Amino acid sequence: MKKSSLLFTAELPRLSDLGEELLLIYDEVLPKKSPAFKKWMKQFSLSYAVRAGEQLKSVDQFPAHISKIVQLCENTSSRRLTLVVAGGGSVGDFGGFVASILKRGVKLVQMPSTWLSAIDSAHGGKTALNVGSAKNQIGTFYPADKIVLVKSLLIAQPEARAFEGFGELLKISWIAGGPLWSKFAKEFEVSSATLWKYLASSVAAKNKVVAQDPEEKSGHRHILNLGHTMGHVLESYYKLPHGVAINYGLDFALRWSVEKKIMSAAEYEKIQRAPVAGYLLSPLRDDLLQTKPSLLKDFRRLLLSDKKKTKSETLRFVFLKKPGHCVIREVTVDEVLMEVCRQKEEELNG
Ligand SMILES: NC(=O)c1ccc[n+]([C@@H]2O[C@H](COP(=O)([O-])OP(=O)(O)OC[C@H]3O[C@@H](n4cnc5c(N)ncnc54)[C@H](O)[C@@H]3O)[C@@H](O)[C@H]2O)c1
Ligand SMILES: [Zn+2]
Picture (cartoon, helix red, strand yellow):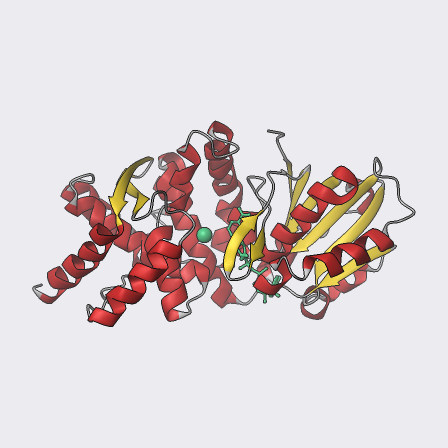
């Protein structure tokens, strides 16, 4: 798989650094949020504004979008055209997909504008559309030629967003272990500035995993789902922001890893003592794992609808032995639900 080049920059890049003939696809909120972006985007002769969110990725809406985009670039040459995609993960998934099929594939620059997209979704080359309520059912592997990480654009997000980005950063630092985790573990404060500080090493850590299994054939790339099995359930059930739900999902995965004796109690204690663990959310502490019968029924439905499930009632759960060492085990949906009950019991019994 092609390697994307990375550009870390304080300010928005010069257009001449992005390509020859450019089409900008951008989240319509960006010019409203950032006067600098508004000024910058005026330099593009071709641009297309979109509204971010899952609707943008809906396959039903796609024909209308692609017709307009084809019209916009009717006088451009497929060889010279570069799509510049500025926005969060939904815009990135949509724009990446467009680049992969437009004129049988054109050059692509991703410029992520949310922490989630900067840390995670812009890297690794996955593009996606949704079919009905089923997320990411259609897509391509199409790594960007270039990914531009703009400090001023990312830092301008509300501080609450930094907390959402924290979940993904914690995930990748546990997957990577080594210096990324040992440095990040010592942070007492998580802010936009902290996320920017660790952005380059977290992207490198994701790319290292992707490079071993670029098109999800060997299964290794699945470790990037650490915290996401229960995270997705809690995200849907409690309508939580993705990064917050992943933060909870990581705590669930950690406790289950100890219960299964994949992680030692001493390792667990060490993680809990790290200053940054003060930001780790627990679904138990916040009472998200009530064991009433309807909750388990709803969790079962959500677990089964998660696209990561393999055979009918089993899924591949990512456990953590220690930072830097994930273990994938096939588990049944019932085992996940039993662990929900066990964690709750353990909490009740102190
Ligand atoms: N391709 C992948 O590998 C991958 C991985 C993880 C997630 N995803 C996808 O990413 C999407 C979620 O990403 P997201 O949370 O970035 O979603 P998003 O694109 O929907 O953005 C979230 C919100 O932030 C707003 N926004 C964007 N930039 C902003 C800025 N600079 N300041 C203020 N507001 C801003 C958007 O308008 C939107 O309301 C999902 O569709 C998910 O499936 C893809
Ligand atoms: Zn995620």
